[in-house]
Image (tube, rainbow, N blue to C red; front, side, top):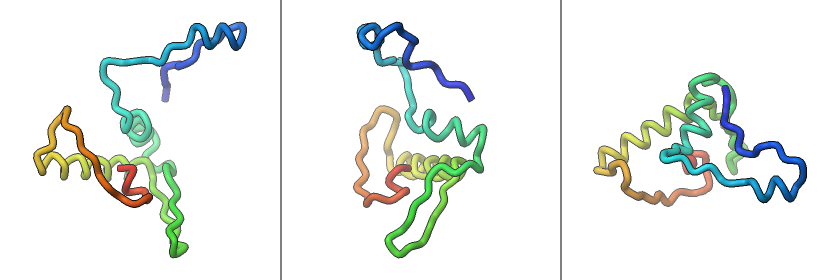
Length: 99
């Protein structure tokens, strides 16, 4: 797996700060960058470990997290949400909120 370098080497902290610019690609998918690439190359790798208040331990793997994200995207599309629309979901602090 390869990722673009965000910070170029510099000779000093001052030079690093002066030369740094956040990359601003025309199109960027945060879910793809954080989960999709891992789901493609290492779907069984642990992505998230959630310890529920009742003590149950739930391990989410990259592949299943990516599939769950796709299911949520499809459900929202079925409700009429389209590319470019904005949407907010109100969920408790659980792994499902990440999808």
